[in-house]
Image (cartoon, rainbow, N blue to C red):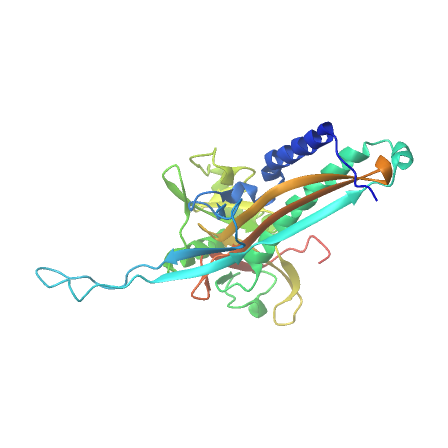
Length: 328
């Protein structure tokens, strides 16, 4: 059986598609606005292994010194402290998908361009796959939580304990008092956290009178060109609020297991590390002597929530009751 040999024109089409994917993909990824190749980011992007051998990336958080040092002429020799690093790893994974068109005759029966449709759905699939992996990683087994109202656990939530500005204040306080501290990102000389709320929690927050008054009085922000402000729902206590329907929710909180709830994400600097092994690429393959075409997309990457000493480094779960505007 002879293998299909692509013409130069076909190869150039694949190259153009791959180049367009890399240009368009950050805009398709919801978390893209929070991702930068910089430690001063909610999600730090690393490319150490892109184009290099190896599939495991190690990264380190250096813990602060705990000693008091010495004063006066007291000898410093013999009183030195040891560096106390915490190290974690990310193991890269390849993810791929493909669409195969049935044939030239079938393609003529539809009013849209099958090739364009195939490329569009594959691009969307890759963006959603990346978002889903980040959501899964950030929301798995939270070690720090702030609960709605006076609740101290999900089981003690009542329907009235929805998200409020006071709960955002509480999350900020927990972030500052944490050891090590949950650092905000620095933008234009000011510090900001990000709250990613479920759409139901956003409904509750925007109907809160304290929130409304704060927004009406003009929640000012510097550095609006920073991506973390793109599409923001609001700003409160140096916390940039966004919302998304994929934030985890449930309906079995409270003492009677009947209270709808949301696990909103309060995020600081380096909440997660995202590692590329190979950026999104595209492939095209001919079948049946060119009668049928297949389109594929793939990338090598992985994301890991920053966890040091078994504690989430920069994620606080804001667990509150919610107005259930959906069926689950």
